[in-house]
Structures are given as structure tokens and as C-alpha cells.
Amino acid sequence: MFKLLVIEDDQTLYKELKTRLTTWSYDVYGITDFAAVMQVFSEVKPDLVIIDIQLPMFDGFHWCRMIRSHSNVPIIFLSSRDHPTDMVMSMQLGADDFVQKPFHFDVLIAKVQALLRRVYNYSVEKLELKSWYDATIDFEKNSVVTNNDNIELTKNELYILKILIEHKNKIVTRDHLINSLWNDKRFISDNTLTVNVNRLRKKLDEIGLGKYIETKVGQGYIAVEEGER
Image (cartoon, rainbow, N blue to C red; front, side, top):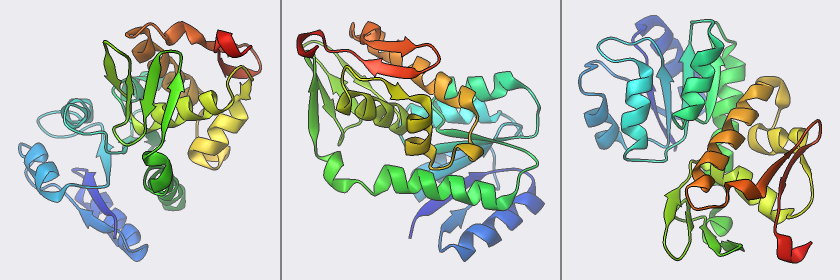
């Protein structure tokens, strides 16, 4: 049974979320003391976190930063504010998805199921290592390692890189990436993919590999490996 931590101060919404998610056999935990979010996170050790942006004391962005400093657990943001910058900020902080309130519960559940399936249902691939230039992509540790450097990726960033490397020197369309990541492109903003790819490229810049993820305008993205052209 997957454990979900819902960081939401609207108790009516939380209770409805818990009822619906429990129906799908998820073990759902909430927050009563919003000064102890990280304590609850450490005790529960959730498989996925759902965070509202507007919270008492500290906002959801703060808790996303705190969680990301300790864990790569999948994170879905909820927001009642109609600001595109909220989605961009959440993705830049390492969130995996973003849901605008009010939302249809079936849509949120579909996103939860897709994210859990993608993150936890490829145990064989987790142990696989892939090489790209002088770097090794370690699926077990969610990292890219070179002789001198090591960067950690979120699940989305890792999966995007995996798909691009599997199709080295070939264009991977945006639709292919969206469908691979989120199963149904009706449930995801096209901008979410752009933010994830840009965040991946920025991290790869730290080890000199960002320039090898190229954007093909109107088509998609390509992972270049010059020796294999």
C-alpha cells in the first residue's frame, strides 16, 4: 500500500481527498501542526506528497524546498491561485506535477496513479546504468555521475533524460515525452514539460552536459552524442 502525505489546511478538502484516495487503497496522512511538517514527513516516509501552496506559517514552496533537501519523493502541488508563476516556481523547486483548484478528483487521482506507476514500477530499470559522454546515469540513486562531479535529479528529470538518451541523436517529440511522463496529455500543461526540461538542462550545465540537450523548435528535444552521429 502506497503512503501519501497531504499537506493541506482546508480540512473539508483534506477529508474528501482522504476518502477518495483511501478508496483506491492508498494510506493517507495529513497535517494538524503546520510547524511540524518535516517531523511528520520523517515519521510517515511517504511515497508521494501532495502540497497546497497557501498554508499557515510557511507556504508550500517552503516545504517543497525542505523536502527536496532530504528526498526525491514525488511531489504534486495544489493551488487555488491563478498565477502561471506558481506552476513555474513549483517545477523549478522540484515538483513533479501541478493541479489547479478547483479540480476534478478523478483528474488528481489519475495524476497520482500515473506518477506512482512511473516512479515505482520500473524496479529493473532502477538498477540499470547508462553512459552518456563521460557521465553515468544511475537510476538507483537518481543521479548523474562524472569523474569529478555528481548531480541529483528528480524522478521527472531522470525519466526525461532516460528517454532522450535511449533515442540518442534522434528527435523525441514533445507529445512522446508528455505521454511517457504523464500518460494522458489532457491532464498536463505543455509548459510543465518545458519547465522540467529547462530544469534538467540547468542541472546538467553544472557538469558541462547541458549543451547536449538540444531543443528542436516545433518538434521536440534531442540528446546529442557526437561520437555516434
